[in-house]
Image (cartoon, helix red, strand yellow):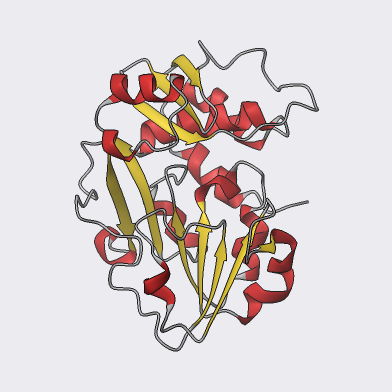
Amino acid sequence: MADTAYYEILLQGLPGRLRVQRLVHGVSWTAAVLSDGSTGVAMHTPGETVPRMFESLVGLALPEAGQAMLSWNMEEASEALAAVNAFYNRPDCGFIKVDGKTLEDVEISGKTVGMIGKMIGHSNMTAEDFRCAKKLYVMDREEKPDTLLDSASEFYLPLCDLVIITGSAAINKTMPRLLELSRHAQVLLTGPSVSCCPELLELGIHRLHGRAITQPEAMLQAIVEKRRSINEFSLPYLVDRESSGQ
């Protein structure tokens, strides 16, 4: 059976007093609003080839809705992760750094780097950041120029000193295997889908770089209007081993 520790850690911290109040779907993002007004987001991952775990997540207590992170209905799993992120990625938490960058204080020079999800140009990363790397392997589920298919992770991640993983890997359930393949590397999770739960660092992750929604209504409208970026409605949310005391 696959290692579900990543999801179990997230589920253990969810309070039963909160419920899923609203879901908003877009082309790029799925958002969830909880009963206390907290709003979270996750990448919209299409795929409804199997039945949902629940008819709807709306109205469910957060711990119950969070179980759908393990659903193989990808639409439902996107909704569940958005709801979970509404709790963990809150603007009132002390880990947020307004000027936080994905690669802040990260040594790249001479390292072999693996990237799951082509994020150069996103998450505050540029091609310039990796010019001093010994080697860069970029892998993605979609066919893109100069990019390996993500199945190449089985071959290349064990060779890497630094691995950068998109948070949406939690939705498609590749996250546990990617972490296993990267167990000897420094691991960074990045993107709006990342759940900034400090306990995840216990899995060997070194940095969680997500987003905290600061303008929820504007962000929800942007999702409805099918905008691809939500950065203007959120702040970088950075949790690492130093800031969390892990």
